[in-house]
Picture 1 (spheres, helix red, strand yellow):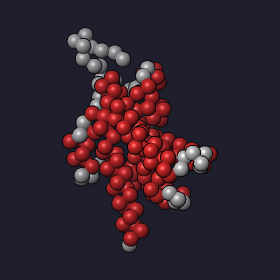
Picture 2 (tube, rainbow, N blue to C red):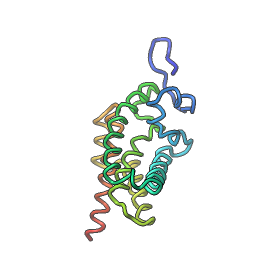
Picture 3 (cartoon, rainbow, N blue to C red):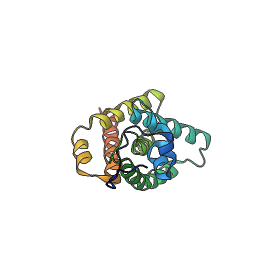
Picture 4 (spheres, helix red, strand yellow):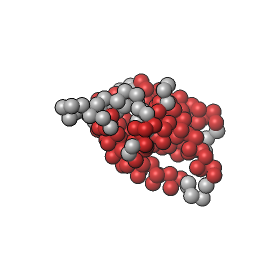
Length: 174
């Protein structure tokens, strides 16, 4: 971490692996490196979430049960508030694009609630989640502007996950 002479945090515009490895909160907030992607880090983080959910659930189905995923998501959200607050502070940017733990936790929630689903359905879940996360239509944008710090970083993605699930509920209804 670098600081300015006045003691203010330097603004880090392009995070590096060195920065990520400097603190456990950075590793988590930056999605174990998936957030360091030079293009569309949020999408990279969401792809990491998808792949990790699939691999962990397939490889260790007795450990990564639906109830275990609920606990992972709840605890992951709480730890994510801490990790994103620290990483944002150390970067000098409250919600830097490289911080993707929020996408990971939120997309795990989406996958948990649409599973079992075929690949096509999971692709649509990915597309809808990314749409809501990037565009931030009301009220997601409101929550993004209203809540700051680690909680704000994490919460707007949970709202995006909710809207993704709402689309699926309406789609199945009609």
